[in-house]
Length: 399
Ligand code: MN
Image (tube, rainbow, N blue to C red):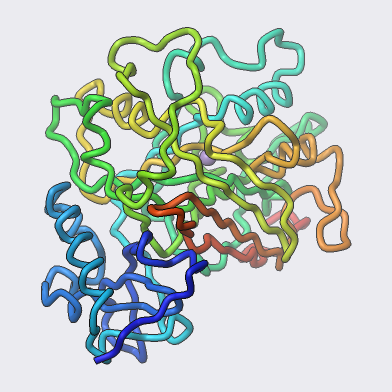
């Protein structure tokens, strides 16, 4: 047996206790938590076979009360003597996609981001926001099968594009490959068809929170998106962090949602609308280029889930909905490169080089921290991805 020591300033102290799926030395993937610099096997710690599964879905399906009981049991167990064979140094394990992604929807919940993009795409429009934007959380349905875990390489996508000067569309590797620094919410238990989730109940359905990079090929997106929205410009890869931070670990990070004006329709109203104060960080080739504040988001996670189901649509265990790019009011807080470089017209210095969009070999890492219980700071790990060349040819060649 062993007693786990955790540094007081660890982002993975007892206030966090995230869930992940790991393997070690070629073993089958199993569910673990992270404490300090160790991964602790939850199957061995708690003696529950649900944690011998290769994903979190069977555990998440047990529901909100079971999540709370389990979190208490883990807290108690890791404070005592832990079986030696349940403990692995974090650098010795392989982390896997922590849950099987059911449906995936991406929202657009930052007013700063939506306004920045509106000004770039519709410079002549008096209002950078579309008329619907303050009445509903705008979103689109994405590709769950392309959600990958942190550390997975991202192959530069090929597709159709047509720049303003091109007489005809061309096919080739994207030349405007971008990121979107986002936060993802994992649905633990869904709803029956025809039975919407009220905003007040959303927190009983949301199991946890992940970092999310919605890689975006702006040239493919710009040509394809009219009139049905993003498709292949987004669906080639989306990166999630390996650890799912339970919503219960974020009680101390809750804030009152910033004022919404005009007030939303009744199904989007709450007595005490809550947001989350998460401090994000975007690292590009080893240099932090932005610190997006999640606290500045306009639409809340509860409103997004209420809206997602208000027509009776069904959600399931493992559904993922993401916030949309997190951008704050100042350039140092913008969560995409299309914003940071003013649509690619104003390169920024990144690790000594001028950059607009992503080059082959570039690596982007998202990180975040938040307030945890008893003055602790908790971390989300990272969402890391490196761009590898298009399988069809070089960055500039047509395919
Ligand atoms: Mn997005």
